[in-house]
Structures are given as structure tokens and as C-alpha cells.
Image (cartoon, rainbow, N blue to C red; front, side):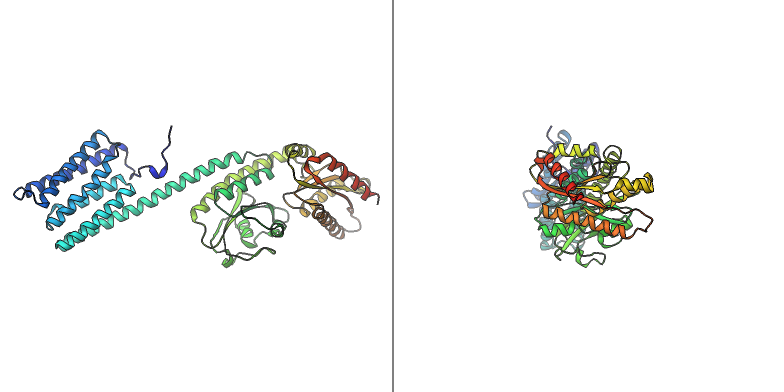
Length: 489
């Protein structure tokens, strides 16, 4: 079945179909009575302009009544009603003092407002402008001219109201359509997959330049960039600057949203006192929307989109983003629960081998460069023997946290074995992977310096390897060899 587009629909005042028909019939019959009364008034002046106006108006009114009664959904009715304004204007020109003139114009305005279709309304406004000009030129009394102007002002008010209502309806329909398109996207499995699919869709749906999700680290109270999507090309340096910058809760636009749980709508981000420049990114005029990702009172992070230039967003864009963010938050909550139950290691909270196997099967056909860090906790058995298994579990948890905080949020951290961890760095070369490994070791040294003499120390051996994703198993084997070479060096 063919669906009518919103801009092709009649925008009615809210009356039901039967009410509109009754309203139109009564109004047009009244107009017909007025024109017939005019014929009686000008019966001694046949063939004059006023007489012809009454004849044409009477016939047009009759046709409108007939069409309304027999074809209430036909296209003729609104235009027939509009055409009634033409003989009314002629009456003004022919006889400026005609008492039926203002009443005709008022009734026509009411009838047109009853149909509430913008193109008819604007046509009627044009007819009334001609009528006012003609009445003024013909020397109509000021009272009649004021009445005409008042009626036209009322019609323009109706036009404005209809325009806003029509636009609001279109916006609501558009929001509903985009939300319906988003829902299948959110069925992805895993927090990372949900976030990536959602951000890509939302950036395009809102017509934004870039979009980013920052997830909250509840323990350290910082927002960590999780996924960035840009429709415009970003330099590797700019992308790296954005993805490696953590934001403390309360700092910057994103931090403010995370702290207060409220959205931000700013069409001039550079002049917003809450804004903080990300090091390594250019200073430029931006319009930014930031909304919290929150469900059941728990904050998961924030979603930020931007457009280049000032005054690029409207409040309707913010409302759409808030609606989408609510669904994304629910999807993240669901995916996080699924991961905890089936894909996360119960002790450390990072991914388990089962999820790694799923991920490798899903992406094995993709052709892209990938690096891995295979990490072993050196002399971990001695920690268990000296301080006990509870302390050993705590050390593993600390190790997982150090690794997760040292890598990028889009990287995959997996508990690979009892005291081994694997980090998967997609689209990452060897040099960058080596830098990440050194950052992990540096964080470990900082952690060790904070320990007292009676607490265990943590020492890691890291094997770094890079290859094409299609050589996944060979990649793991070579990383294992490099890790053991590091262990025995």
C-alpha cells in the first residue's frame, strides 16, 4: 500500500472527518446565502461588476457545497473555497460599502483555517492583500479596512501555527523513523560492537561530522574514549590525540555531563566556559551536543557529536540524540550483562578465551594489520606460595586493571591463561604496539613503587608481534615465542 508523504498530507485543526465535512458545509452554505443576498441587493443593477461577483460567488459556493457533500475527500473543495475570495474582492472594488464583504472574508478565513493546508492559506492571504488594496483604492470606510487587516492578521497567525505544527509533526515522524533504524543496529553483541555500530549510525542520522563515546571508569572517575567515528578525514595524530585523552569527571563539556547527568547543547563551543581544548586538536568553531548514557540511575558514559561552525544544531537535534542515547544506554547495559555472564573473566573482568575465539572467527576474513601483546606475570607462583591465593587473585586483578588503563579503550584485553593476558590491537603497526607495551611496563613500575616491602611486586614479560589478521594463529604463535624469549633474556 502506498504511503502518503508527510508534506503531502492535509494538516487539519484536529476535527474528525465528519466534523470537518459538517463544518465546511455550514460555512459554505452561509457564504452562499450571503452571495444570494447580494444578488437580491443588486437585482436592479444587472451586469454590473458587483452583480457578476455575486453570481460567480453563488455558483462557486454551490459547487463547493456539492463537492463537499458528495466527495468530502476530493481535491476540489479547498480550491473552490479559496476561489470564493475572488468575487468577495470584486465586491469590495465595486461597492466598498457592501456589508457582506467583511463577513465573507471572515467566513472564508474560518473555512480555510478549517482545512488547515498551508498552500491554501497562503493563497487566501494573497487574495486578502488584493482585497485590502482594492478596498483602500476604492475608498472603503476605515472600519471595513481595519476589519480586513484584522482578519488577515488572524489568518497569518493560523499559517504560523500550522507551520509550527506541521514542522513538529515532521520532526516527530523523522525521529521515529531514525529510532526504528537504530534499533536493529543495537542488537549487536558485546559492548564494543554495540558502541561502534551505534556511533556510526548516530553520526549519519544527526548529520554530524564526528561522534565519540566515552565510557566511565567508575573506580578512577575518568571518562575514557571508547570509539570515534568521523565522516570527515582525521589525521592519525589528531585521532590518536582524541583517543588517548582521558577526561576527569567534572572537567570539560563531557566531564560536566558525566557529573551532572544532564545534556549540553552549545552552538559555540569555543566560547562555552565549560569547554576544554583537547591537546593535539585544532582550535575551530564547533557546535557540540553531549548527552549522558544512563539507565536505571547508572552512568555508563557520554555520547558526543559535533558539526563544524557555529549555530549548526537545533533543539530538535538534541531531543533526537537524547532519545537515541536512551536506547544505546539500554543496549550497553544488556551487552555488559551478557559479557559479564558469558564473555568476561569472573576474576579480572577482562574478556575470556571464549570471547576471543568468537571475535577471531568473526573477523578472520578481514584484511587489515593487527598487533598483539602476549603478557605473562613473571614468578606468579611465588606470590601464591608466599602471600596466598587470595593475594594472588588480587595481584591478577591489579594486573588486568593496569593493562586495561594503559591501552586504548577500543583494544581487546583478554585473560589468555592462568597468569597470562593478551591484548589485541586492531589497525596498529609494530612501532605503535611497542609504544603501548612500554606504557604498560611503565605503569607496572609506578605500581611497584607504591607497594611496601611486605607487599608483592609485579613483573611482566611482553611479547609483541604484528601481522595480517588473516594470519591469526601464526600471529599468536610468534607472539608466544617473543614472550618466552623476553622471559629468558
